[in-house]
Length: 265
Image (cartoon, rainbow, N blue to C red; front, top):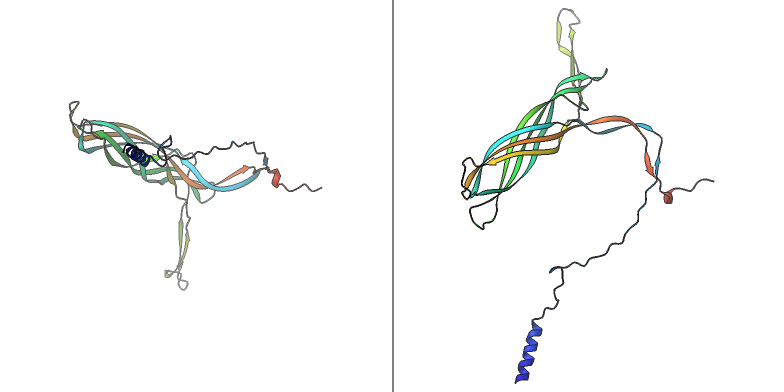
């Protein structure tokens, strides 16, 4: 009888043993693979003769830093006892340059922009993490978008935008029979349209200075459901325009001896 119980006990323990014992490192281990170290060496370069060429590339015309001041009121639900963290990002909807002053480029019919109004709009996205009144409650999260819009005057261009102005001309004719009156049925028209590259903006940096507070002061363990924010944003932008640039440079190609054709004897 005792022997049967012993055999039954051993069989029960064997049934509960895992088929694959746990492996150190977690329940889903990954077999690592050792990488073979590779050698590297510099590549010889061949510099060709200097040539003058023209390329068409985006050119930075200005890089202003705008100061944007916004104020808003935010409702919190549930009520908060403490603001833990505020993360901010800026998103732009438009960066548009409107030229208002020009100088002619030599004897051409194109002009450099010497002054322009830069229109900017977008919003500040805030992610507010705060604690509620519960002693062991989870952190709450509130996301708000604070819009802004405005303009600034740009007068210091590093590389002025180039604008071609459209021109329209009209010629009228006399009545060839009398030479005393105009012909209303005969006109000459000339219309020159120049298609310009539109200046565009690029976000560079956003520096936030912010004050968040409850309009009504509360006790250390008291709650508040309204948050007042005052933000000063220093927004740095690039204003670019695609332009043709002429420069002198030398072509550079790598020297790959294994692909070089043999020297003619």
